[in-house]
Length: 132
Image (cartoon, rainbow, N blue to C red):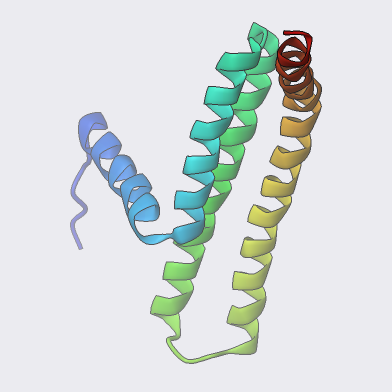
């Protein structure tokens, strides 16, 4: 069997196809992406520091990466055995659990970095309206 040698441009093309497949077909990946965009907007409003942006971007990247790996695992398992199998269930549940852990971590990071600044912004605006 002869293998086709893949150049770097083709590698990127296949990688982006995998990312696009995940975003197009996986509801949770779509939810994570929308939440990420909302977090970016909130971060712009509250004025995050460069370090805080780095933490937010790393956290969002972690969640989307885990979701993409989970999708690859699910597709591979479904291809190997379309019927329900106890071992396949464990593999799929474990991969989904990894995504859940990443998402819960992202929520905690978001609250730590955005919670107080957002509350300050909300209450500062309400206080200004009350004074008028």
